[in-house]
Length: 65
Image: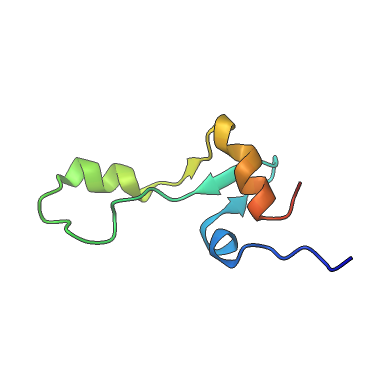
């Protein structure tokens, strides 16, 4: 049986925290920033945690499950 391959797109986009949760970045922060308010852009800067319903899917992509 061959080794499982980690999804290379997922390994660039997600990171594990010390407690085992999965960190992610916010979307909509890369371009067309002129029409977004300062508050919107500032809030998109911070990382978020992957929602509970999506954790299993992300773990599969990262070969953690």
